Length: 353
Image (cartoon, rainbow, N blue to C red):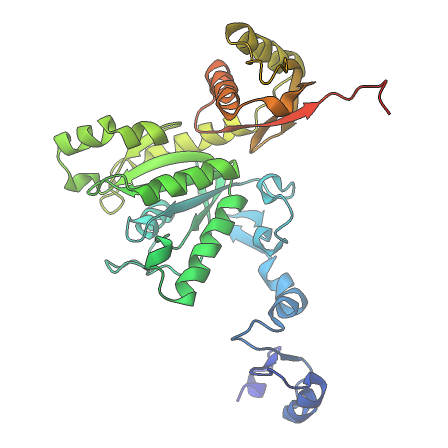
């Protein structure tokens, strides 16, 4: 029946665990097809070769979207490549993350203006990270819908564990992350864990409280005035209703601003001046008789913003002073929604061998 359509055919021979593929392959040539590939779907044997050999061209095709062409092959790259600044693409990658059933898929459907993501009141509907290309006001984006992240002791199945791992992997690939929180609930410890993971990954972050159509003004004020709210407010915060499409269009402005701040050009002279202002205002403490000296600073990388500081005995800097420096740079540079990471490099003594 397949042969009648005169299509290219790939035969996948599954369940090859413990078998000699070359012997297995001979039997299936009797079908009359030249492309035969053996896999174990359960254990993942042969899957990476399958993708590279047969599907790379298919997945890397140029997509026609709004009569414009975009190369959509980012997710085919290996994990050790920094995809955030991949030079062959010109769109911003936004991961939408949060606990299960906070409305991530509904928000992505709203942004795409189509019912592409399956939504349900039952938590855990989304199992994998799904990439979606969209244009808005002549700018191009990829919105990545992710599986909800549960607490470790709530994960009961290996598929759920895999889904959570995919979500964490997606965060590292994104330029900007939207952390969605259910406004009908309180800000949980799980939300804070996700927030800290995003910050440590160096992503720009936007906080979005969903389902605000279901809460009162006093409940909203209680959220804003809570201690946990102050812990997560480093960038723009939006109160929306994804299902009612309330204030969702404002998110694009925050995405553009957050991304722009993460890739801005920061010259060595400016960074060194800010560093010296910080040390003049608050000198590094003397630790165990060691006087710490910060000499100069320069930009190490963008998205995440990483500043390299050179000096003497920098390994004695306390975590609290590093936190002070981070806050000082963010405040002085007026950076919105982005952490600033530091790499401290001790100057070598040319007279020591």
